[in-house]
Length: 220
Ligand SMILES: [Zn+2]
Image (cartoon, rainbow, N blue to C red; front, side):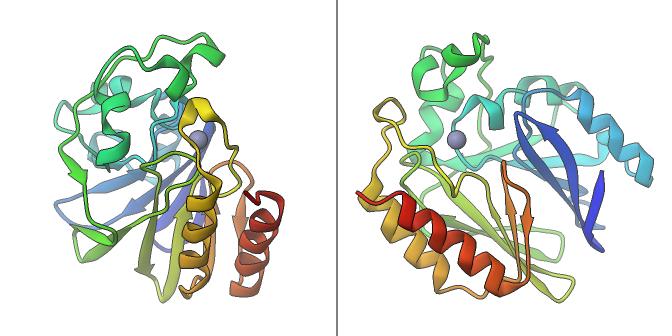
């Protein structure tokens, strides 16, 4: 559990990095992805937060290392609401998409959950507390990949979980879409990039460099 800004935390890594935003409101705590095991979530008590205060979880895409713990997360509250892009929704809400979700790679049984809301618009905003969680559609890694953009604590933070890829036909990856998505991100002012597997990048020029590097590696 590590503080990134006053209200934003890196909870830890379980499959992917899991991030948490404390809205200090009736919306409680918001998770960005939930990783593969809820064990790690317990560590939020170290900074005085309670797992039962998690009310929302935004899923950046349908991969098992980002969604595997969703079902177990409900042990902290039956009313935790999940959000994802509609193009990735089927694999999250139904069984039988194990090569798409990569559950078959990990030899894990995925237990589907239902989404409170499916994101359909690019830039759709989820309001939690006083904050706007802007869901930017960034297809490429998967068709319904989103990055979450948040202005908080005088910083502009991007939760860009799988900006690095990888790209496979089994995921319905598309490198042309990816290039367009990354160009979209380069047009944003981003002070801090919270990546799903490779750490936290700041300041803005480091974020820019990171995105550019992966655009160069992953050309169509
Ligand atoms: Zn992924």
